[in-house]
Image (tube, rainbow, N blue to C red; front, side, top):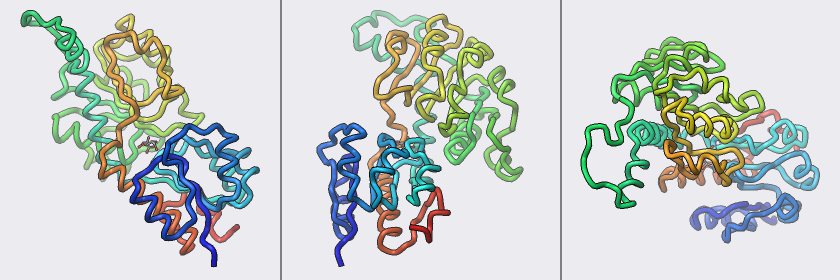
Length: 328
Ligand code: 8YV
């Protein structure tokens, strides 16, 4: 019996490719060329499976052009690159890579919060530019972290990880806002108190965004929300580009309506809003919150496990639209 055909849409660990080759005929993009949608379709149209990352949009047009496709396995917990309804309608299974990146990503959220509040990159640029001539009492004075109020918008697994770090490690008062309230036991474990969005914006010293992207969460933070924040507050976005209105944020940072921001994700990334590149009070990183080798390996393994689990054994590990199972 011939092996199922799959496409690996981006460069991944050679070991992942080797493992997939044991089960599938694999076409892979190990040169990591950026494919247009038309180029993606050309390669995907005779495949039964796709190993995707957050960068490949799988929508009705792609699905209509790829009738043999049965599964797209994302090497990411976020899956806003998938039109899941269209995938379900076409009988294509969607899987993501949850859990394996939770603690690594929470670590990074906290690192970005610290770097932002304590002005680490801004002061390093100053030092590297040879501008450090003398110590002064208020040089790069930042915002207090220990004992301050941490506001988390989006209290899924990663948000809970950040809450634990803040409460247990940094003595922070943790407040959160989420579509639904956590159960009392989980709230107690995270030492987090549920509040409305407006109260969170008005009272938090540091706000971390960990909400998944959807049309409903588009511009969760825009000019109106920034105006409610304390002028001393910091904002961290490790969620997705589009959760923050980047133009409005750049204006707020320039006018010092908030103190600082730390951003790992951007609207239209890898492009970054030009105004964000010119304001000093922002820490910018290129979507690396889950980037440690062990975590990226675990994410790649889980995406591969989903492909093998479904196409070989009929049992995916982390299906997003399980209604498809038993269908096509
Ligand atoms: C990925 C992420 O690295 O998992 C996610 O949702 O944002 C990152 O961990 C990125 O999406 C590339 O797949």
